[in-house]
Length: 138
Image (cartoon, rainbow, N blue to C red; front, top):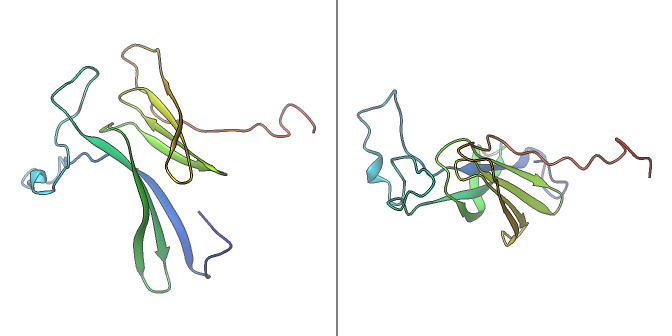
C-alpha cells in the first residue's frame, strides 16, 4: 500500500496472519515451539481450539532492506481460506473457515461483524467494491 507520507522506497504491506503452523515439505519442523501458534485446523463448533488470527501491517523499507510491524489486532481464527483488504478508512476481514466477515476502523476497532448462513461453506476471499461510477453517474 503506497502512502504519500512515506519516503521513496517505503510502503505498507498488510496481511491476514492465519496463526496456523503446518508444512508438508518440512514435516520435521516442530511448530509447537512457537508460542501461541495453532497446529490443527478448527471446524465450526470445535471447542478444543482457543486461538486467534491477526491483521498485520508492516512498514517495508526497500532502501534499508528492513521491515517492521506497525500494527496488529486479533481477528476470529481461521487456519485457511481467509483474507484482508484495506479500503479507505476501513479494514475488511474474512475469517473463511468460520464464515465471518468483519469491518474494522483503521485503529482495529470492530465496527460490524457478519456471519454467513451458508452451512458448511467457507468464505474463500472477500473483496469490497464501491461501484462508484459503475451504475450511476454522480
